Length: 131
Image (tube, rainbow, N blue to C red; front, side):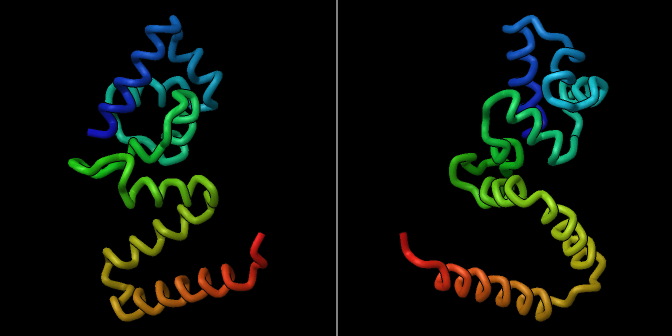
């Protein structure tokens, strides 16, 4: 679904500007074979989505929006923005998801981790002087 959106937008821009997959690859830093995969609607990495979104001048969150949700008002968009700002979090989140899916991270531990993160965010915000 979102892959179709990105492929549609990319194909439209390429047609409008007379660009080849190699042209787009050169500008985005994404391999031309990956550009071809995007155009065919295949799933690609978050980094690829970020690079292509920048090329298209759109918010990468619109490509990770769950079906039926407004891309302007979604948790996925917010999460994509956080990962865009702190790319190393992607690996940590993927690892956490893998542990949850494998049943290796009990719900109470996950809640404890999230409570700590929420407390730390609040604590850090309170430490900063107001502008």
